[in-house]
Structure formats: structure tokens, C-alpha cells
Amino acid sequence: MSELRGPIVTHSLLLAPRDAVWARVSTAAGINDELWPLFRMTAPARLRHDGLGAVEVGRRVCRSFVLLGGVLPIDWDDITLVALDPPAGFRERSSMLSQRVWEHERTLEQTSHGCVLTDRIGYVPRIAVPDAPLRALFSRVFRHRHRRLQRRFGGRFVPAGDASAQGAAPESRPEDPPARQALA
Image 1 (cartoon, rainbow, N blue to C red):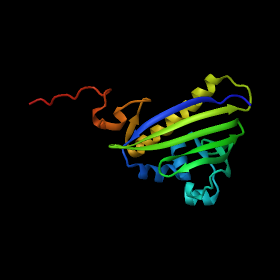
Image 2 (tube, one colour; image 1 turned 90 degrees about the vertical axis):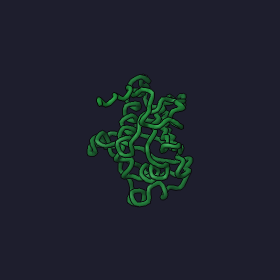
Image 3 (cartoon, one colour; image 1 turned 90 degrees about the horizontal axis):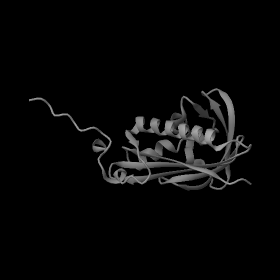
Image 4 (tube, rainbow, N blue to C red; image 1 turned 180 degrees about the vertical axis):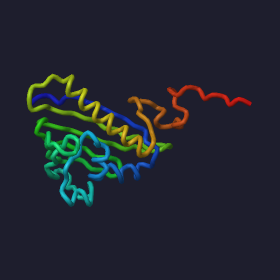
């Protein structure tokens, strides 16, 4: 088997408590909201109703079809969670039509201003494809997902190892320009 490619890592500081973020991202509706309008994933009724609470760790959850624009099937994902620790996160290790191995680890870490949500992706394509286009595609999809979460909860991207995610107030980010003084 080929070596696992990646990782692709995306971090966001979300301005909501970890429990509130988990309540959204652990549901089929929440996952589809993150993916919209690029994709939608199908799910059985029990998963749509109970979210990850319906999952037995180590067993295949379902075959989810990945629908481009919410309508055109372009891939499938035999979803299997190998670790589940609500509200701290999960680790998925699945196979897809396009990927022999798909690993997605999502962690949620409580901070003084909300939580840091991190997605880490690894993959092994079924066919020999150069890594650059896959890395670009997966990076864009996960940045899109994080932008959707940031719109829902407030927040921003956080570079890996950025200590400001733990302590700096979101309104005083280092990359923000200085505030203008009001004219008296």
C-alpha cells in the first residue's frame, strides 16, 4: 500500500464554547452546512437524527455519497470512525471511491475565547495522481468548511502553533490594522 499523503491541517479559532460547536459539527446537517454549496453528503436516517451519537466506533457507519452541488454523485465514502471523544473530536479512517484511505481527524480545544477547531487530513489515492492537485483541492475544501464555521460562530483562521489562539482577544489580532482615532 502507498504511503499516507498529507497532512493537510486547518485551524480556526471559533468564538463559541466547544460544546456548542460540537453540537453542530457532529450532525449530518452541520457537516452538510460546512460543505454547502460545493457538496452535500448523504446519510441514513439514524445518522441524520442522532448525529455521531448513532455511531459505533470501529464499525462502518454507512456509505455516504458525495454530491457535487448537492445533486451530482461524484464519489462515495465508506465512513468509519476509529475514535470518538465528544466534545473533543473524532478520527475517521475510511475508504472512498477516489481514495484507498481517507483519514480525517477533527479536534476541538476549549480556549478562553471559544474553541480552536483543527482538521487534519491524510489520504492514499486509488490511482496514481500527483499530490499537488489533490493537496490543493482538499486544502480549498477544508478552508471553505472553516470559513462556513467562522461565519456561523465568528472567528478566524489560526496559523499552526499560534499562541494567540489561546489567549489573545479576537478583536486584537496581530494582523489587524491599528484602530483609527475618532476626531474630537
